[in-house]
Length: 307
Image (cartoon, rainbow, N blue to C red):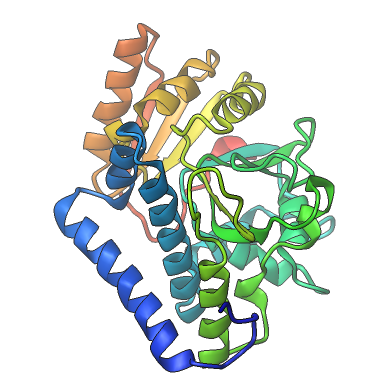
């Protein structure tokens, strides 16, 4: 018998079992595979779709709990404060392509939402393009600023309303007022109701985590990448190692920027990352832009070209 969200009945044993199973699953995968994303692609490639969906649900629940109990990276605060205009509260013309499916950027930006912190409001302000469901944010390709989430978001939304209403029923658990055991109870109930009984079932809650190499929504995100970066002349790569598992989309990103002149690579291992960027250009048989390594990672790098 399923619990209603907010019910504390049988909280202890039921939810401890869920959390233990999820943590143990992710820990086991982390020991056996280079990254959890590598394991996810193995499941997808070998057509183990039920395990694939369940593992993505476990990842989403883990990230929601982790981010609720840990402060977000404060470098996002400095980055947003440096970029945002004090008078208009607008960002400069730029596009952020993010492989991260966490909510770190949104959590930091939520401080600029003074009334009714809700994810759909944050996504609207950031002009988010989310691979997993293009109907959720009011994404506008014509806006000067955009935030494209290549892997979607590790979170859930209800599936009970039509697509035009989904944006108003997102599970804003990171901004909810519940604490402690009540929060864990709520999020575990969402997880239970997000389970796929089989590959044809539609669960009560839908996972927004959708890898860029997954066929679902891939053409949509590739098209929006092309539209946003075709005139780009300066690129900043922050903390991204170009894992081979993402090679298809990475090559697409670079091939969509024919006017690129300068690439800044911010990473403790910037030299090796720069070599991987060069290798991509060599594969594409394109001219290699000027690459400038930045090894100071104390703050997210903002190029002078931004003005």
